[in-house]
Length: 134
Image 1 (cartoon, helix red, strand yellow):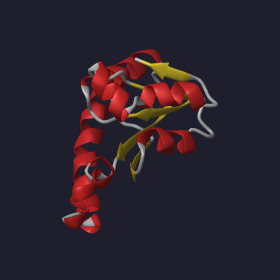
Image 2 (image 1 turned 90 degrees about the horizontal axis):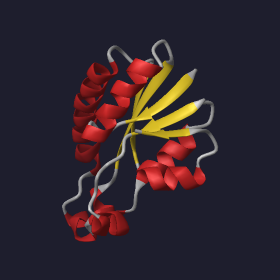
Image 3 (image 1 turned 90 degrees about the vertical axis):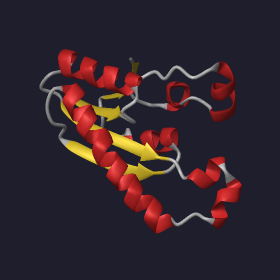
Image 4 (image 1 turned 135 degrees about the horizontal axis):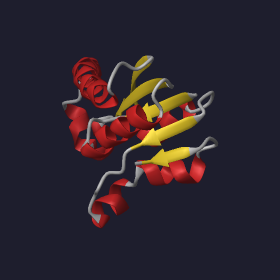
């Protein structure tokens, strides 16, 4: 079984990793961490935005995210992929060829969810493979 596990090392994502490690031991697990461009949230930040520095620091942060997720998973993942973009769009694009996509539920206040959207909700409406939300 090939599993795509989306992670940001939040409590929900780490709980999802623990669940995958327990229930799907022996599966081929790929971790993906998607970092969204800050200019999308704060257009005025474009003045100070340095794409090269953002990618470099994002890569460092991803290493930390992957390390914590691997620990929660109980071992190593087959692959670890860091991408920049809109999380649900990147996960949708990457989902081809996987048997299951797993994400953790984040507990965002309803106003945040309304303004920022929900990755798991967008995936539930658009994904072509099974989705497990832990």
